[in-house]
Every structure is written in C-alpha cells, then in structure tokens.
Image (cartoon, rainbow, N blue to C red; front, side, top):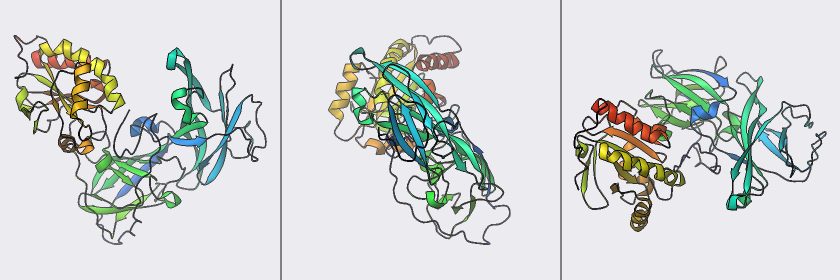
Length: 444
C-alpha cells in the first residue's frame, strides 16, 4: 500500500482525496517559442491497463440503494439488487449489483446509457475469499466495466474502469456495506517534448470523471505525468502536474490547453504566468550512487551514511509505526536480518513517525525484535532524511554497498519473499559468492 501525505494515487483501501484549489491557467504567450524549443505532444488513448503504469489508483465511492431508479427501463432477473449511478463524461450510467445469499454476485452496468441493463458488454466480476474476524469467510468481488469516453476528436471510445466491493457482512467495513468502489484504468500514453527533450508521459483521469481538461479542470482533475529524468517512474512532487495549472520545467513555465492538435488530447505553450520549478529528487535507482547524509541515531550516536558501513551492505529502511504495510513487512524483515546480519548485512531505520513518538518507536522495535539502529527526528513526512531522498510513500528501502555507495536493490525487491533473495544476491555480488571472513558487525 502506498502511504503519502499528499498522494496523487492510492491503493485498494484508501479513500478518495480532495486536492487544493487550482489557479486558472494563463493563456499561452504567442510567438515566444523557437522551433527548437517548441513543445510537442504525441499521445494515444490506452483504454485499459493504466493502473500498473501509474503505480496505483484513486478509488471513487458509489453509494448503492435497494430503491430501483426510475431510469431503469429493463433489467435482468435479480434476487437482491442494489442500484446506483456513475457520473462519467457528463452523463449518468446505471449500475446494479445482485448479491444473493447462496449464489455468486453479479455486476450489471448500462454502458450504452439507454436504461436497459441487459444489452451491454458483460462486466467482469470475480469472487475472492479470505478469512475475516473469528475465521468467518469473507467474499470480496473485483472486476471491471466499460463506459464511453469522448476522444480528442469527439469520437467516443470504450474505456475500462476497475471496480471492487467488500463483503457486505464484513464487520470491519460496515461503512462500506452499500458502497461500490471504482477507479479509472485508462490513460493517454506517449511522449511530451519540452525544451527540445522528449520524455515518456501519461495523461490520467484519477477521479474517473470521463473528461480531460475543460469542465474537468479543478482539484484532482486530469493530471500529466512526465518522466523528466527518464528513470522509468514518476515522482509525485516534481513530475506530476495538474491540468489547468502552469508548471515549470527547465526554467520555462508551460500551460496546457484542451484539446490538442492532430488528435492529441492537449497542447502546450509557454505561459504568461511564472511559477517556480520543483527540483527532482536524487536518482536512487539500482546502479546509481546513494546520497550521503549525517544524522543522529535514537541511541544518541552519530551516523555517517554510507561511510560508516565500510565492508558491509546496508539497507536504508523508511518506515513508521503507524504504517500498516510497514508493520506487515516487519516479521520477514526481522527474520532476514537475523539470518544475514552475521554474513555482512546491516539495516538503518529512518522513522517517519509523528512528533513525541519516541516511546512508541522503542516499544514497537523492542517487541518486534527490530534490533538495528533507528534515526528519528519527529518531523513526520518532513523528516530530514526523507526530504533529502524525496520519499513520498512508505515502506521504502534501498540496499547499498557500504564501500562504493552503489544502490544494489530498491523497491519491491526488498519486500516480502524477495527480501532474503536480494540480501543473498547482494552478498554474492560483493564477495564473489564467498562469505566474508570474520565479518564485523557495525561498531557499537
């Protein structure tokens, strides 16, 4: 699960977010861009499969009711139906969920908007079972449905919206008993050229409104993702821009306008309004050099990272006691550390806990067997090391060679069952397959 103070995208259990008010876009200043600097937009609609490319999604809530809407002209035979309407592209589309007690549930969506729930593309709706409180079996349904999205040229195209629903009898989610959650799984994908440099880009509709630009402008409207440092990922604070709000890249402030030319969803030009450029965080991809820092551990000892870890491999682990996914990783992390610490692996924790959480951190680390040192300054998401590294979600970790400062592994390769494998691979790379002779632990 991604957890961030201002996430642009969230995962399954997150609630929809409300963004800050946006300034109206300035009109592009005409005649101020040379041919070599002229921005270009080349993008095509990807009707499904956007979520993995974006790295997450923002779930929208649809409240359901047993009351049958007057707009329903025809419906399949249902035993225990609940109804709702999705607002998409300025239109309303009927939705029905049938959940019999002794049979699998079904999802129906009036994709063609004619009031008939029997003549539309079949929605995908698959059951997943899990153990709930007191061993009770819980049924969660996940799937997708299609709705028409108006294209750049005005021709509608069918796009996919992911959807899911928790068990109506789940006591831990009573507030979602009559709620269907859905999210956009479509995106425009291609390239954006700014200042003569071409970058991979996506234009997303995170609130699943079915519109890009125009009436969709405003908090949380369409968002432009641009891989400015070409590292294959998007950093929220420096590479994601809200439609209708000018942004600065390379010292030039740009404005988006909808629609674009030649079938592109939008166009770019220099803006009359000037805004500051947001610096990119350091590149800490595998093979890059980690950013050094000095800090004070919770035991009062100074740490100089990574210089203090000569001859060792160290995992820098950003986490917090309030972070459920972080705590979910702890048992596996403790197990891997106990196995690989004698072989040359160290861990340095960076806690993003809130102010005055020292006692909580000590209690949690003691109870969970997290015996490695921790750095904590009580600044929550503004923790100094987290700010230096551009951390936007936790858990987040980097495996570093203490001699060279090279990043050996990062991301999902340091989570779950991949963690021990990454420790082993890093040791083999550093030692040529041999274990260190008399490996020394970190100085106490």
